[in-house]
Figure 1: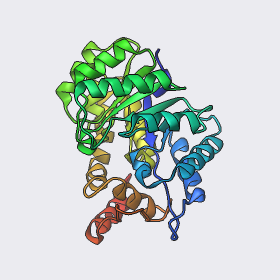
Figure 2: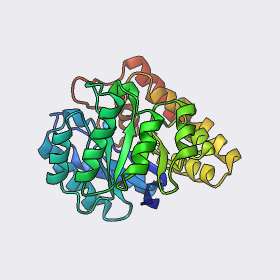
Figure 3: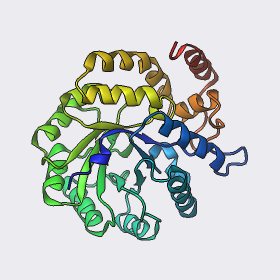
Figure 4: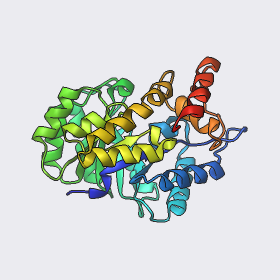
Length: 295
């Protein structure tokens, strides 16, 4: 089952917080409007960038409802539901308000370090219970376990409801194996802002971006140009944003992108522990970069 809406520039939304640690829904609405006006193709709610490990189930439900309401069908909404407890994921899929969402993005099990067969059975079980199409999310730098290309391809071929993967392994050879051997109706998108443009040159169909929270317009333009094989323009945009990418991920995600958004006046620079704001020297560099960005 091909989901064409996954193609293009997705954005993994941050979760803004107030001084008292509560969710800042006013700021979230501003960011949603900012990214949609910037031309993004879809929104991912409750991804890693949304600090989901620190959110309660009720907060997650509230964020989904609010995001769907404010997006108002202008772009598709994808919801992140993943973890290392397969049955808990199924429970969340059954109880979260997913009716008006496009798909579920499910990060591979972290900390548990399952075998490759364990990864397969985990996703097979999720797929069979999922009320929406499932997008795999491979980010071994966070989970401690890579999803090998052969497991991704096995899942793509065996399970009709597994429709795509967000690949953030950083392993270009692994990515090329997936792209070369995948079923025609299976979509591969990048999970790495710095590699998205060259990965599209290899055959990926888009990105789920952190940077697009701030750089929505340029990320959208770069991805569209790359998808249309206009790589001179795509390269120019990539190099314009490259220093920004480096600063965003220098210490932590989402601390980096929240520093950018706070400096731009889109939200406060508040995070939930154990994540803390970026250091003062990095914040100074970010503010200096923002002054010159786009000029």
